[in-house]
Amino acid sequence: MRIAVFGPGGIGGYLGGRLAQSGQEVAVVARGEHLEAIRQHGLRVDSINGDFVFNPSIATNEPAEIGPVDVVILGVKAWHVSEAAQAIRPMIGKETCVFPVQNGVEAHSQLAAVLGEAAVLVGIGGLVSFIEGPGHIRHTAAEPYVKFGEMDGQTSPRTERLLEAFVRAGVQAEIPLSIHAALWQKMMFICAGSGVGAVTRVPIGEWRSLPETWDMACQILRESDSVARALGVNMLGHEVDAAIAQVEGMQPKATTSMQRDIMEGRPSELEVQIGAVVRLGRQVGVPTPVNEFIYYSLLPQELRARGELST
Figure 1 (cartoon, rainbow, N blue to C red):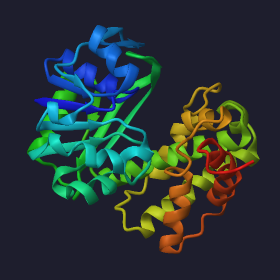
Figure 2: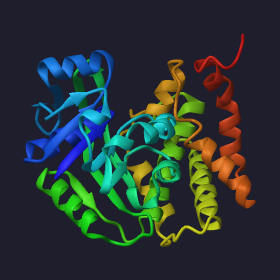
Figure 3: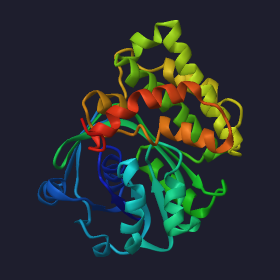
């Protein structure tokens, strides 16, 4: 397969590197110092599963230099998805599929609005990794996994080929029975961990040990599940329990990326996580009081980080 990674950051760079290791042709679209370092030395990946250097077939800031590919792995921040949808057009052919790995539940819809549903997969990706410096990614925790499916929930030859490619690359991969339910299950999990973590500003083991804050997390899960069902998502019935188990399984000293971004004054995914539950809940008439409390408690800090709130 011919694959392009648009945004080879913590997750996109890792997945692209593993696919290249297994024999796939993988190009990257990056920018700035990160791109220059990749061009000069390759993309260094320090991983709990073994370190390696990924030398892409093409490293560029111009998607047109790559041209149409079989798969585009979209690894940009969630708030850049709509902009990225326009930029990746030169890499979209008749059979191309775009695989978004952002948090949240709206990336595939944003892509489809620009590229058409036929070009887009619903995607989920997970691992704990980040850009350590230009041309350098560090994977520190969690077994990397991907889940994906067609927008209509059906299995297709291209998703089967992509599944096979990830399995050969040593990445846990799955085409779920309901990709939209799987997407919302991850949304519940990250909203609970990120929301309570960001508003309490302590590691998960501390807020998880208190009945009051644990109840807040469980309420976030239940509210999110109700919103998904009201939106018509084919939930399978186990998602809340599965998300609770995921939160219970997190290391006591763990924090989330959204929590760390907010605590350190950086722009975060508040809007695509907690904010999306609030917004979509209003759209379908489902109350989300705990999500609303957390969202509006954190919103001033988010706006300040984005330069949208004067002090």
